[in-house]
Image (tube, rainbow, N blue to C red; front, side, top):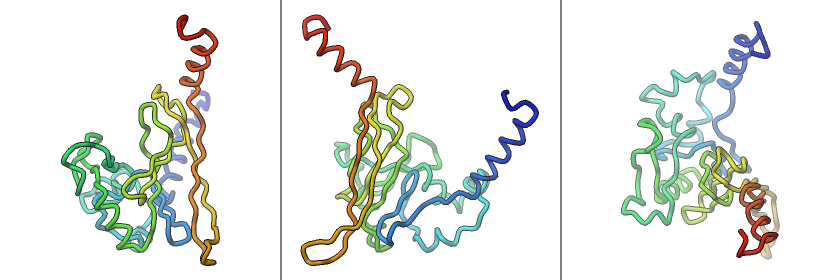
Amino acid sequence: EKLGSFAEKAFSNFEKAFEWLPLACLIDGKILTVHGGIGDGKWTIDELACVKRPLNSEVFLETNNRWLYNILWSDPIPDDDGGTDLFGVHTSPRTASAVNFGWNITKTFCAMNGIDVIVRSHQCLEEGRGFEVMHDQHLVRVFSARDYEGHRNDASMISICKDRTSLNRVQLVLRMHGLRSLVRLEQEVSQVSLGPDEA
């Protein structure tokens, strides 16, 4: 509305720019970053590097490109889910085209591609810490928007640096940095200032 007659053109240009954005980033050959997840994990980083651009929404919905769609929208099955479906690939409650993947899929994918960790960002947890280490430390969820859509969640970011071990080998170190939920922080402060009986 504020762009007036340029609104439609601006939207179209943003849409075209998004069609060229990368689907993943490989850091030092050992850490893969994606928005969603790895889906069924039956693809390689080399195959992903060969994907032609631009990628519009129709391309993602083609049956042979479901793996690309899942890079954006699949979710891991939590280790402490308590259910019997911790292994393998399962349908997602999010959409029929996306899947949920178990720890065994993550470990196999990492081994097949010679990587150590997958970093993903696509999942906000209600009152969550903003990050979560999962799947035998092969998967890290990092969510950077605090209090997202009323979820009272913390935000996090990750820094990655190289460090020397005692054996003089270089390793990548991931460090989480958190930012508390303002909603929860305000509640805690008001409870302290009012006292437990007055809150």
